[in-house]
Length: 328
Image 1: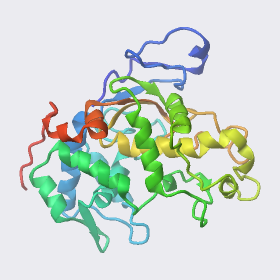
Image 2 (image 1 turned 45 degrees about the horizontal axis):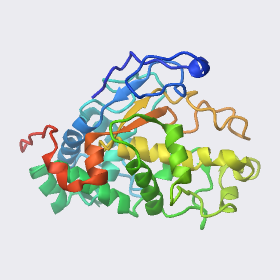
Image 3 (image 1 turned 90 degrees about the horizontal axis):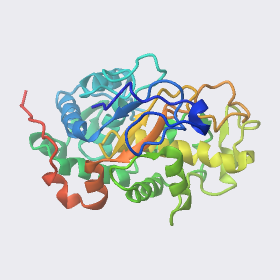
């Protein structure tokens, strides 16, 4: 569900001057040139969950046996089933903006992480928990899915930032569970309904009681690299490495999981040229973006997100519409 998809413009030339149009409390100097899309995610979260559960019930979702990631055909199928399409290339998006599937990739991963589906060979099949959620969908199901994803050890979101190599080296990364907890704590510190640009959110993640840390220590950062492990090591990047490593991890969690589950609304443009924080690093200048999430510019904790983060007991009393599931 979009809100003002073409009325909000931003470019770097505006950073030092005039006020650009946009929704209240949404700061835009960090936005790249071109239209910025606003996606209000909460109303679509439960209908999308039901749609993906239905696909799983029909045996139409498949994952690669080696990686347990959804196959490309499955990602396309999920994208077509989403209420407003994926963030890029859907009914609300620009198909030529250089974006890639985000929500359509996340949903099959969420079903597995949340115990709603399991792999039978290469096919995702519903578990009893998934069958119950499909029979009686509720926002409590969404909140439970968020909690179970946060505690999952089945995958690491950072692997989706493919431009950063060296992630598989033993002892390099902190547990994904602790990183998700740090991002969740940052979200809980935000005032619901108020827009926060992602760089301001980064500042919260860096300074909170348990700061977000992707690498196991300063030396471990030397094992991560762009393009070449010898010349492109992120060890010499110094303070800039935080935005590249922790920042990209946070963007992935926010865009691919928090927004997909309706916890945050998002303001975003295409990823190409959206962030310049990696420019000048060895192996980076030939890239027009460092991740598919670079276009995320601002977030807003939704009504659904506020309940999930602060008062899960109120989830089923939210004034959001409930999808009607008709068995096929």
